Structure formats: structure tokens, C-alpha cells
Length: 484
Image: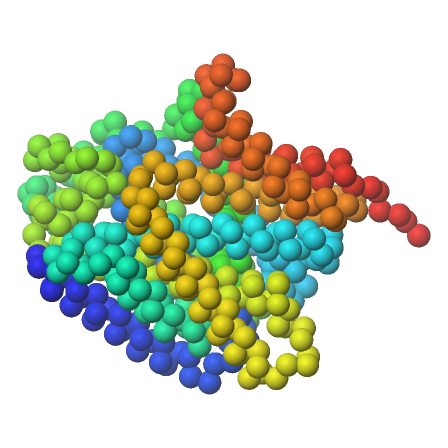
């Protein structure tokens, strides 16, 4: 499989994206960019959110996890379902009732200025860091298989990717992304399904027999009952539930798409449909991982890490067509995590920090010009961040940065929980200090947990501890609401 062939597929795919962009971005205004004029069909949003929730990292890594974690990740996915139920029945009605464009505006109404800026600021830090890392991991694969063959510098590869995302999101924003996500979800799922079929044919085993082999193998183990294990099933379930509440329900990128639906009823239908589909999609990824494991064992293939198992098999052992299918799926998974992040960050900065929605003295044209400047500035930050990650080129460091990005959702969980479940008044100016203290404390706890807690290792449940510390801090520095 030649670099020219891979690049040709990439260009063809990009041209299709731009065709969708041209159709959807015509006559777009600021409301189109921020909330899609609230006319997005709920079923299109539901389907497209699959691609947005599964990044390029997930596309490469999730199948490889089966080697080390079996099917235990499915318990996390079951927790997702309950998390989406909370989002659909508690958070989304609140957002629609308050007619929010940025979901962090709620913190301003409930607590005050500093809490509002803290919540929005934590989202911006987390999404910038997380999106940059995801872009780097996908761009680095394209660099190895395409651009290195032509001695093209890494920075040019990054620049091309960033420019493409700018061009198809700059005008249409959410109204465009709703439809491009649908296209990307289709190609990503098609890549996984076709990869399963290619492996089945190469092994000369029917899909039915492969399913039986997976079912009877140790790889299909789903429930870990050792409570000290970081994948203990109860920890996995509740972690999945709260990961969803924070990383979807308290995340501007994910909720912005839901807020583009016509009304709360359609937004809830979208959320329930999406969550159901996501269960089967994750199961499909894990099934792919299990048969990849069967394949490498049958062929005696050695891979350096679990993350490399899917790309190694697809590109080097299943033939050029399977390799192209993998790259189409990878590209399809990469674009949603980048375009959605760029759009949501533009929205958050424009609304939460520049107050574009309340500046009556500005014309629509002036607001658009400011939004363009914000959009391009964020894209430039992405560019610099990806270059820095490329210079680091240290998987251990990158894993730590991912963990740090995840820590920033804990304070959001604590803030929203305190706002929804208490009526107390916080000392608004202290909120930033409490929100910073919480993830720092969690990092120290996680680093020393085996010593402090008799061998106990924190897993995803660290998010709950993070939110709890924020909640307790807010409670300590708060007072009862005066009744009239």
C-alpha cells in the first residue's frame, strides 16, 4: 500500500466533507454556528454523536485493550446508559429551560461570576489539551505511513490537518458538524465491520465460528470481582455513569449538539437513541479486538503494544484494501474530535468570556468577525500544542497529559452537583481556589494510593473523588440561603 494511495483516499474523503460543508454552511449566521438555529433533526444528531464520542484514539486503542482488560470495558458502557439517562432527565431540561447557548452560563446564574468563569475555564483547558493530544496521535500515524516516505516535515502535516478543519467549520459551525459527523460515523463503523469480515476470510473461519470462539475464550470476561483491582465491576459501572455525566452532560462540545435540536422532547429522543446505539458500537469494537487477538496468535505476530495491534494487522497482513479501510476509519474517527472541539471552544470563549450573545452594541457582522478571530486563534493553539507533543514523542508523558485532562472534569461535577442538589450560597470568589485544589489533591492521592490504602489502585472512580472534594470545599465555604 503506497503513500500516494493513502493520500488519495484522504483527499477524496476530504472533498466529500467539503461538499457537505458547502451545502450546510450557506446563509449561516452566528446562531447557526452556535446552536444550528435549533433546527437539527434529532435522529441525525443521535447518529452523528457516535463518531464524536469515539475518537481516533478509541478507534486504534479500544480493540487493543481486549488483550489486557478482556471485555471489562463493557461494564463501563453499561454505566454510560445510566449516565445518559441522568443527562436526558436532569441536565438537558435545565439547559432548555434556561435557554442556554453555553451550558456554563448556568453557573453564573446559580453561583456568580467567578464560579462561571472557573467552570468555563476548566472546560477550555481540558478540551484544548485533550483535542490536541487526539489530533497528535492520529496525525503521527499519517506521518509514519504517508509523509515520512516523502520526507515532508511533521509541522507541514499538522498545518494541513488544522487548515482543513478550519475551512469546513469556520462558517457553519454546529450546523455543518451535525451532518459531517453523520458521514464520519458511517465510514468509521463501516471500517470496523469490514475489518471483521477481512479477518474472518483471512483465517478461513465463518463469522458464526469466530463469535463462538470469542464467547468461549478468556477474552470475553466482562466482570472483575476483585475489589482491589482497578477494573472491579462496581467501580467500572459507577465510573462509567459519572464519566458520561461529566464528559457529555457537562461538556460544551457534546451538549452543544443536543441544544441544536428543535425542543427538549427531540433532544431527549436523541440522547436515548444515541446511548442505545453506543452500547452495540462499543461491543462491536471489543469483538474486533478479540478476533484481532485470535488472528495475531494464529499467525504468530508480535506487536510492540496493544495500541499497535489493529493498525499492524490491517496495514501489514490483511492486504491493501483492508489497510485502506483502516485509514478511512481512522480519518473518520479523527475529524469529529477535532472539529467539534474547535467549534465548542470558539463558542465557550465567544459566549463565556467575550459575551457576544449579550453585546447589543455590536452588529451581526462585527460579532462574526470576532468569532472568526477566536476560531483561528484556537486553531493556532492546536497547531502549537500538536507540535509540542511531537517534540515530546514520549508515550508515558502523553498518557499523563491525558490523565491530567480528565482531572479537570471533577470540579465541574462538584460545581453542578452542588448547584442542583443544594440551595446554599457559595463564596463565589473562593470557587477558583477550590476547583484547583481538587484535581491536585486527586493527583497526589492517585500517585500514593497503594501506600496509603493498602495496595488499592484508583481507576475511573477518581473522577468521583475529584467531584466530592470540590463539593465538600464548596459546602465548607458556603452559607444557607436567606428566606424571605
